[in-house]
Length: 340
Image (cartoon, rainbow, N blue to C red; front, side, top):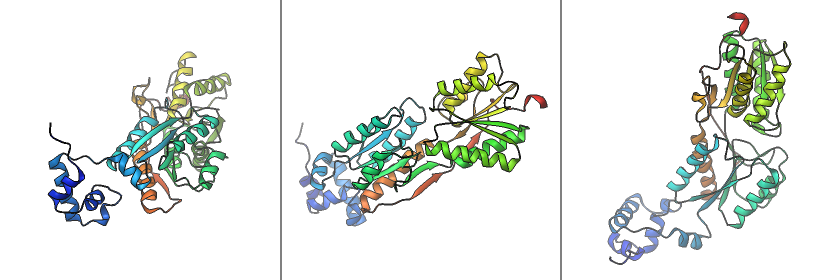
C-alpha cells in the first residue's frame, strides 16, 4: 500500500500553494478562493484519495468542528428525525454532532450543557428550553453561540427554529367544527414550555372565532401516561364531557386512546381525538391518528444551518424561523355522537 497522500501532493497536482488547498477544502473559507480553483483542488484531492485532517484543522482554527445538541427526551418520537436533519447538514459542512439528553429535567439540562461546553463544542442547538431557564441566561451572557429548537428560550435573545404551532392548532379546531363539534377540550402540555403556551392560546382563539366551547386541561408532562390520566378524569366527568379532544402532542393523544379503550368507548364514535407532530407510527394507531404534521427533519436542518451561519459570520442573530405545518386527517376524527 502506498503512502497516504498529503496536502503537499494535492497542492502540486492542482498547481497551487498548500494554504490554498486548505482554504478550498474548508467550506468556511472556500469563498476566499476562486470557484475554478476550488473545483481544481477538489478534483486533485479526489483523484489522490486525499482526506483532510479535520481534528488538525480544528486545532489550527481554534474550532473543534463539533456542535452540541441538547434534546429534552430521546424517547419522544419527534426528536430522532430532528436529530437526523441536524446531522445531515452538519456533516455536509464537516461538523459532528455531540448529543445530550436531559429527560425533561432542569438540572439534567444544566449538566448536559456544561459537559458539552467542556468538550469545546463550537455552538449549541437546544431543544430543551423552558420559561425562566437560568442556564440559558448564563450561557448567553457568556457569549455561547446557540440556536433554540422547537421551544424558545423564555426571553433569552437566542434565535429560534420551530413549527407554526398556532397554524396547526387553528387547522385542528376548524376541522372539528366542520365535522359538527361544538364542545372541545385541549389537553395541553406544561405551561412552562413555549410550545404548550402557543398551542393553548391558539386553541382558545380558534374556538372563540368559531363560536364553540373550548376548555383547557394542563398536564405535567408530554407523555402517553399523562394523556391517559387526563382522559380518565375527562371520562369521569360524565355527562359534561367534550365531544372532541385536541391533544398537546401525539403521545398525549395516544394516552387518550388508551383510556377510551379501557373505558369501553370508541374513537371517533364517542370522542374524536387530534394529535400534534405526526410522529412515526401515528398512522398505525387504532384508529389512525388525525394529527398536525410538523416538518421535523427540516427543523433540524434549518437549526444547523442557522447556527453555522452565526459561526461563519461571527454575528449573533435573534431570527425566528417558523416552518409551515399541515393537518393530516385520518380515522380518529368524525362527527359528534348527536349528529350520527
